[in-house]
Image (tube, rainbow, N blue to C red; front, side, top):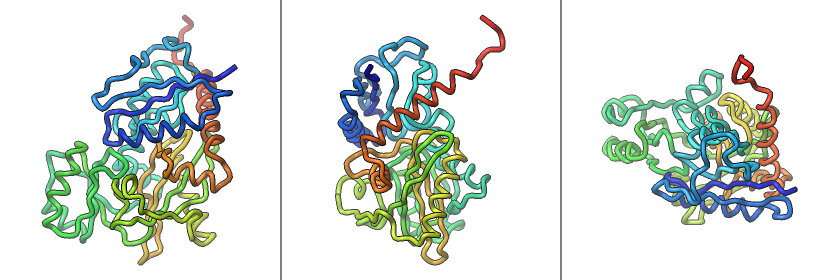
Length: 328
């Protein structure tokens, strides 16, 4: 009997177009002898087609498992995951808490620090309290200015002088009520894919070689000039440490299903820093999450199969949880 997979994609975030491209790749990889596919498209105003999934158990008996392919706000941040929890539907990827914590760069950093994991020095500011002068005194230039909750490098600026700081902060604040300013690391960029629930595994890492000063949205999706080294050219010890940190970060935020963990390797010190964790990484033709698993021996279609298996396993395990102490 076929498994019916509901793929949700599009969405209201700045990563709408990337979501569409990821979803098309995933749907193309689903073996139609094993799966029936239902599409739920969300346009940029938030309108669903067909109608939204109802937040009540049993309301969508035709759906066996949901594959959310919603990058960024209103999809990767725990909001859609909350809807699917209310609907009692199995779904691919991190649950509500891990999704929201991972999406919020400040919260991810706080938890990483609590676990003794290395993160770059930073300051978080609310939209209503932006103070470029105070930030200028805190860090040497250059610095990165980012929205706290967004992905695909949307709204991110590399700031070289005090004069550039305020416009960069205002830009980031257009995309979120909270922004992050952090010391810029001079060095190399790496990514590592993680897969699993209770016993996650890490892929071989890759190195990103941006064609611009940093790996921004244009470089990721429009220019097609960034280069990648897969596997990354690291020593065995560095590779083992990067994979260990990826798993530690994954566990620290309570992630399940999948995530891509991004790193910075500082040239001057040789120190690895966690940059961020992405709970719904890209699945486009150029996305590194599936490519890292291919390099590690797991092909794209098998990866999609495994993610669906993990979603069903987690949902089955949840059935052992009691939500009331009284017998109805």
